[in-house]
Image 1 (spheres, rainbow, N blue to C red):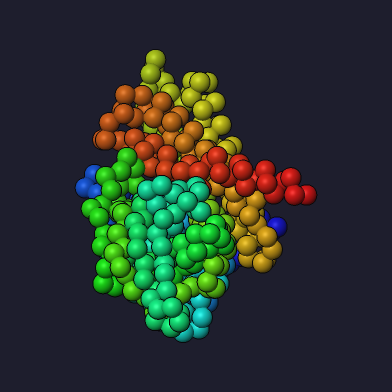
Image 2 (tube, one colour):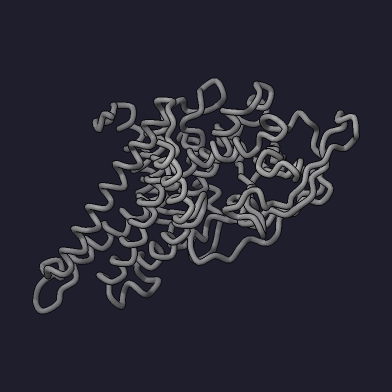
Length: 384
């Protein structure tokens, strides 16, 4: 693994950093306060090539590598975690499975406009009774005719679907044969304007409030077989391969949140005075900052390693889980300590660290909880 970034990667990092600092950060607090989807910022990310970073240019993407994607994700999330996760879902959970499992016809119809940012995607696996246990899902896909040539009829409910209220396309997972467990799951490409698709009201969340999510209700939704993604019964493979890559994106999001907490706390510690000197002079504060900086560096190295392995085309499941669990927990510790450094000011909306604290928590939950990441890591260790 080469820790020296290429000129192209540095350019991506600097482009994302400038955009995040000048256009995203000034709006972050207000977007959070009003729970507003940042439509204009998403459009600007599309113009900068950030909505399909690692997708080949022939399919509308920027043709860059996963590490470039991670670099951009950290910068955007440092400014606004909500904007970061909108970008992450479109890249990791929508474009990536289409690039891996989609036919050329599906790529032409859906991947190209998604990667170019002309459409926005979402990923629907979780349900009211099926989060970590994908096999417990109740959304069904049945053949419209016994001969199997009439397409599919889909019925069910999906929960906590990031981008759901504003998405154009959904990567949807259904149970097509309950007797086969995870081998009975089939994935589809669902245009959100299909008759029978209805979004519930946006979720009112603790954090990442500008990233809208909702329940999706599927009432006798009819899809032609050409919109099936992958093989019948191959949906679990699609989901797990997608989530492996998605965890790298969430690790990068967590890294950005941690960095925001650390940088804001450091600036505050140098400015705030007690007992006649900046609080940064107090050893108790110095130790907090030192721990934050060390964990951020470690999280970044784990995330870069997972991204590099993905780019090399080798298995990276355990490494992505390690990056995700460590970065998400480091972000929560950094945000917690940042609030402590700010003291009473950290507990009010006038200062940014209370937002970082609220935003950090979700990174330990979505795309696989910390508990699930540890199971994934252990499972891979015990195979060796």
